[in-house]
Length: 104
Image 1 (cartoon, rainbow, N blue to C red):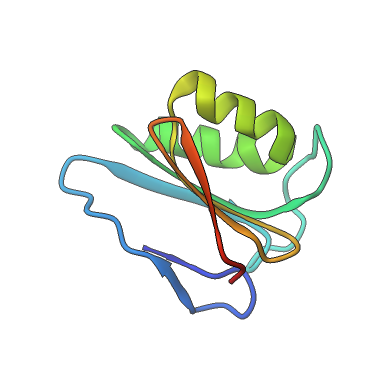
Image 2 (cartoon, rainbow, N blue to C red):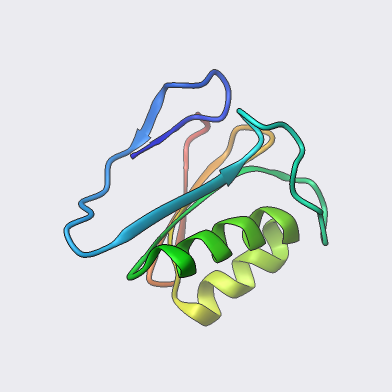
């Protein structure tokens, strides 16, 4: 499960992790700690994957590259998880299919 970026501790999603790993990268607790390679338009990225290393790499990379570039990677690599934009818009993605949900 993952909490909302601001205010912290508001539940956004529950995932069954029977044979998966979950990693998140965001600015809620550590502030701006990721070197950006794109626009700073995301506040949190959570990725669900078969192993923790893969999930952690893509959560951090997604945050660093920004929404437009990350959407391309979501589709190309068939990623699953969610991200929150700085304006509060949430996006869920499952095996590369992206769906926006109402603002958090």
